[in-house]
Image 1 (cartoon, helix red, strand yellow):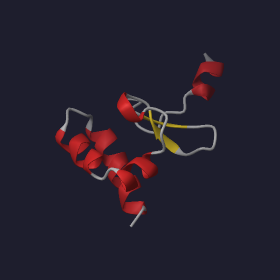
Image 2 (cartoon, one colour):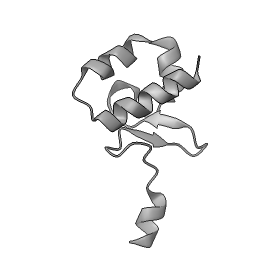
Image 3 (cartoon, one colour):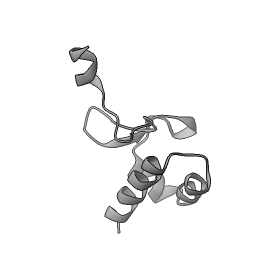
Image 4 (tube, helix red, strand yellow):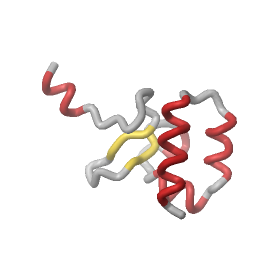
Length: 72
């Protein structure tokens, strides 16, 4: 159990955003799985709106908003 807990690299509670081996937040689902969140938001800003309007947890939306704000 301790080993599994260490491997938990979730940034949000739902596990939609995780840390990669470079400790960068990356998407863990969909067409952008494995891609850095900052890279996706920079090249496809509509993805942010899609997630904000979608059925994602408030925690996921909060984390995504924080990442986006840190880019500005």
